[in-house]
Length: 143
Length: 143
DNA sequence: ATAGTAATAGTAATCATTACTATTAAGGAT
DNA sequence: ATCCTTAATAGTAATGATTACTATTACTAT
Image (cartoon, rainbow over all chains, first blue to last red):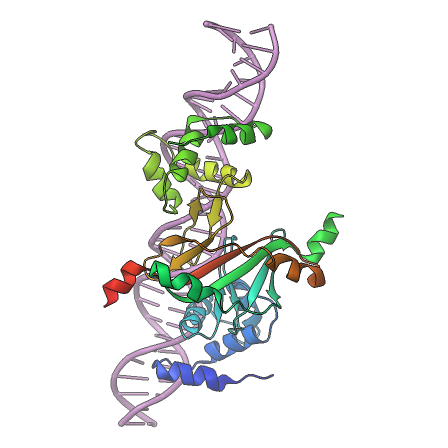
């Protein structure tokens, strides 16, 4: 519902990229889900609205959105990536059993980066923190 | 040279796994490098000692070593994984330009996990922290 | 409305990783 | 030390997520 496409339109125009139905729908689909869907899941989410969309278009669009900072690509142990429409700094918890990715409601550690940056000559632009464990559902299933 | 294969031998025997030349050499190669090599890099590292080793054996061995907690698999944005023979808890810094992975000499945040665990029902077994940025070499090259 | 060209749909190619299979070699029993 | 069982290996084929290719479509500046 709160689909401020203005942000997307501004970012795309600044790069000379065109605004297409596919791009708008993919970004909004991503923003309206609490899950962290894979490319294929997004493909299936938008198919009702764009029946003949191609999986390649989904990948290309996700790449463009990532480049523009409109989404976060999540790469964990599995064989595929997940995508997060929430670009505010936050952490994730990955279930080692079912692969589910949850948002972590913890304050972001802002002071970490400077500490390491100076002595190593490594210029830090950000950090990623992920918790590994077992989600409530998977814990229950085991008992 | 400080190759305490005892650890590997004990861990493998406990699982009924056999001790092979390939497994010993792969683990020692991994422990004697400060880099975080890919499977193919490890394959090339051990080839002088085992000329007809198969890449499949490298993958299978790395999988077994990971299962036994004798190495850490590093999965970042790239299309391939890296392997770290140092299983002591520590963090990494990934160069966004060249893909190099460096060890971070910072104390591990031990208090993080309990904070999140209780209210979510998520049972945490560990966490991973990675810094993103540009390494010294890549910063230099740009100026 | 038109022209120029980026983006798309459909499909083929890529490439890291995994699976398969005949052969080899650990390692326990004799 | 030799034999036997079977796990592990080498070599190769298959898998599957992602990327590349190409003719066609549809944005957007004029």
